[in-house]
Image (cartoon, rainbow, N blue to C red; front, side, top):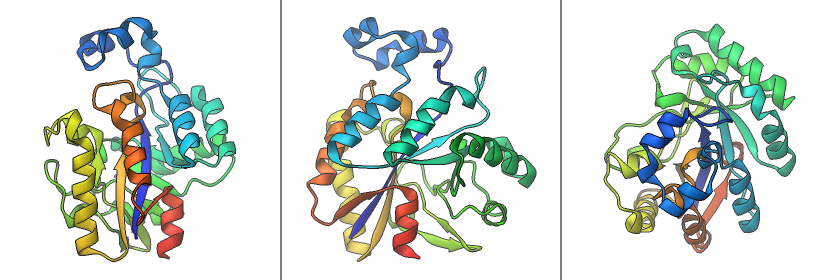
Length: 255
């Protein structure tokens, strides 16, 4: 069985990045989409993800930052409540400057829990700023799992999948991430499904029971490449030995 830990990092404030940032990246969008969509909605896709995943009977994990540039996670309160009521998982997208200070991580966790009204058990550090001391800190703060580890930016092998038990904390390496696929690996949009197929084949050869962690950022759904998400879901659902899960579901399956 290949478990797909499906997740979305919510990197930008709810209002989206500054207009100058969006305009500088307008070539990432089809002209028609860019002209017809309000700038603040080009990067905001949580409702669209909910609609797509609901259609396919899928639930994933959304990682929210609590320290947004020129923004506040409180602005996401309605989205967080909607996700939780619908069965999606909410995790913490820890600030990269917090990883060496357990008190800062704790403050972020407490802040997010003030919106979720329930314990946060999953973590991923923004920019994947992982270090070997992080698992012990997360375990002390009662997280159950982390998914911040990545060994390489430009290749996928068995090191980038599966899981490990580190200081009593489950660690899921990041296997497939939109940003790495499009930039470091130079994968073209038409070859995205092929890359997912190749990754599944590696997992099948190496593991009888495996975890493949997928990050498809909130902001990429309307972008070239990112818009392949629906086809990715269709492909994964067509695989008989694939189960698409939230992070917490995978933890429960392996512990």
